[in-house]
Amino acid sequence: MRVAALDFGKVRIGLAVSDDLGLMAHPRPHLDGRQPGRCLAELCALAESEQITRFLVGLPRQLDGREGVSARRARQFAAKLAERSGQSVELVDEWLTTVEASARLREQGLTSREQKSRVDSAAAAVLLQSWLDGRRGREA
Image (cartoon, rainbow, N blue to C red; front, side, top):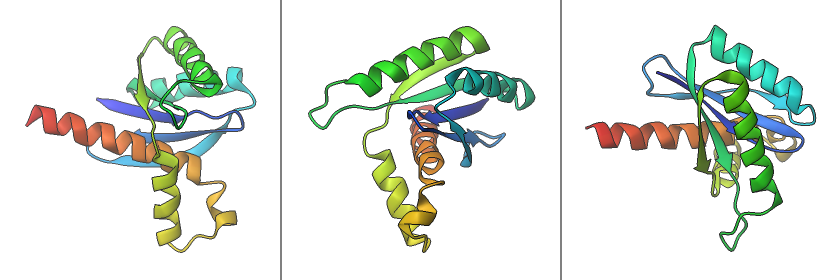
């Protein structure tokens, strides 16, 4: 099963895809979040070309744990993605994935400016890797 994860944002949508074995998450170039219709089309094409059978959409929460405007937008996008792609779409809590992704990029020696174009897809990879690891733990 191939899985793609999205770190949904207004400006950029981070993207990561699992390997064929479902063991490792690999970040991909981000999508332009200002064009949601185009993103949906690109994700549907990705599902077809790479046999993606499930999408994970990060669900952002506020610091107090409640859902805000960003979470509503992510839920709406997830519903449209499920409808258009015909694939399973799962909402996954993305708590602190961007913070972890930024720390990992900083450890690799990237400056804040260099991180800007990569952090969203790195966050999607953190989200996806966590999901893959959790799934493997339940199957063992």
